[in-house]
Amino acid sequence: MLGWLSRDGKILMAVRPIQSFASGFVSVFFAVYLGLLGMPVWQIGIVLTGGLLCSTAYNLVTGFLADRLGRRRMLVLFGFLAMSSGVIYAAYSNLMILIPIAIISTLGYSGGFGPINMIERVILAQCCPDAMRTRMYAIRSTLNSIAVSLGSLFTGMVVILERWLHLTELDSYRAMFGVFAVFNLIAVLLFSRLSEKAEIEMSRSRDMPNLSPETRRNVMRLSFLFSVDAFGGGLITSSLVSYWFFKRFGLGIDIIGLIFSVSSLLSAASFMLAARISERIGLINTMVYSHLPANLMTMSIPFMPNLTASTMLYLGRALLGQMDVPTRESYTMAIVKPEERSRVEGLINLPRSLTLAVSPSLAGFMMQSVGISIPFIIAGGLKAVYDLALYFTFRNLKPPEEQDM
Image 1 (cartoon, rainbow, N blue to C red):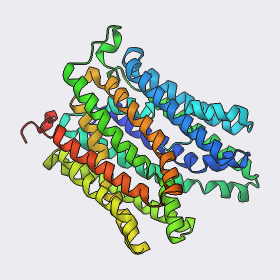
Image 2 (tube, rainbow, N blue to C red):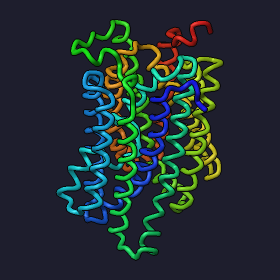
Image 3 (cartoon, rainbow, N blue to C red):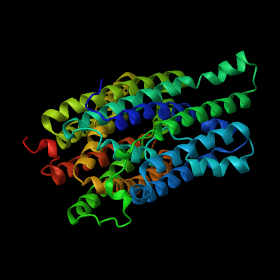
Image 4 (spheres, rainbow, N blue to C red):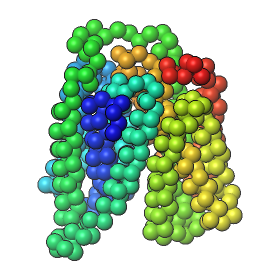
């Protein structure tokens, strides 16, 4: 199975669902746990924003140092940081200790722009033939999505621990942080098994060559376009969409949870579909042809007359709107040189992370002051502009496997 994927690639494929499952259940109850400890919601928001900004700094530093210090070492380091945060949260309940640990370890997020994800993508780009690269990223995204969904369901263990072991509510949460630490320990052990092939040859030298003029030009364009897309996506995060369903239709959290569960499964299915389609029509075409209709659906959701219509559009958006994830990752790695990939990932993710950190707070302000549905319209419009700009800017820059298309 996956005979076209190298040993290092298979190790990273095994790590991804392990870490995604762990972060999946912690991200669900992290804010609730801090609230139980007495932290007001506005402070919890600041902690989460601080964690994302810290992750942004890690991405930038990692992009420039991973090839110099060693990719395996960086993965083990960040894996150990995640494991340590779980141990500390399992052992202590003093907010003076927990707050800085949450920010430093970016605890409370189910994935995204973290340095571990970034380094994994860079290593995976050299673990398979060019023709299989998009399919590999699609498999990885599928495993990640399914693991996060299962992790969300695993959150129910908090109630089981209370009933079966007669633990207090806070002790049940602490036990779950302990489970989180164990999963990340497994990830650290797997990272340590990566071979020398995970590194780039140039990592043995202190003299890193400058990015080529073509790469610098492409990085600047992609950074700007991906930032626009991320800003639009940040206006309609899961939490804000959940709030919209609650206020617009009066839905209970159980029904909202079911909608998001189906949405996650549709997204998981779309990843493999994206890989198949991209082999026929190309990466850029797949990204735009799927993403643009999804964003038109996003803009239309607030205008639907009832819950059924709004839900159908939201689920349709979920099926199409994530098909650009594996294709975008594959395209970015394909159009740069192997020795440039780590730095390119860091540079592209920096502005993207910053805009993502800002937009949810702006969306909350708009929902409060302008209208509860306005973020859907602005987000869909911005992301549609991103699609068109991406197509007309990069349609003629093809990855190696598409040269004959």
